[in-house]
Length: 309
Image (tube, rainbow, N blue to C red):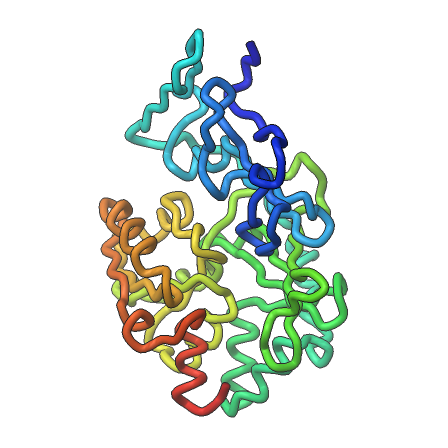
């Protein structure tokens, strides 16, 4: 018997390959399954086979750590019952790697050729406000693709965890053809790099009072644009619908937060916010369900109602 508790699901035709949760491509995502039962670990735990253009790979142990489950308490028994999973009271502290600061600093240049930055200047805000947001959120420029941006994940201790490289066009929309242009800085640092993601904008906690309310959205772009319309909130982003995890939100312990899920994602975020109630007082806004249009997030809504689509 294979003693490793997880493995990739074996290929048994197109039905065993799925849509990638990051790039959205159909039939390119391989899920992990429990070795003994062949049940999926979770729908988003697996690897996209588009490693050069997407690079998404969430390993089972990383997923379980985010759920507060230690490797030492995870056992597999014979002959083939489901693995026993125990949630300890305190999750084990794991080693996390960091991006050298010089590497991040080297990206804060060439904004004239950064499509997203140039798009921000077209929205009608004062140029000084746009410049402040570029500086505050540490938006970088990447040469991975001409015009690409880097969304740096910088934690409360001012350490760079990773950077998400994304390409936008001049209208602020992601470039998805001929493929979704998403990559990660940490993949350049080798397989020994231990990724531990944090909330986008976490580093700003140092300058905000403990009583200040945090607003959480999915997209980094959304956090930046919403912060210009509603500056009384500290806007942060999870980087995706599945990013509202215990590991990432633990830094907000004792604070109040309002989540603004994209249209159609309210139920998922409401359930996750309830599960995190022991560490953070988190509410989930119904605004986008009531006022938003299909596929919109709060930045899309704010731009639309203010005539800046």
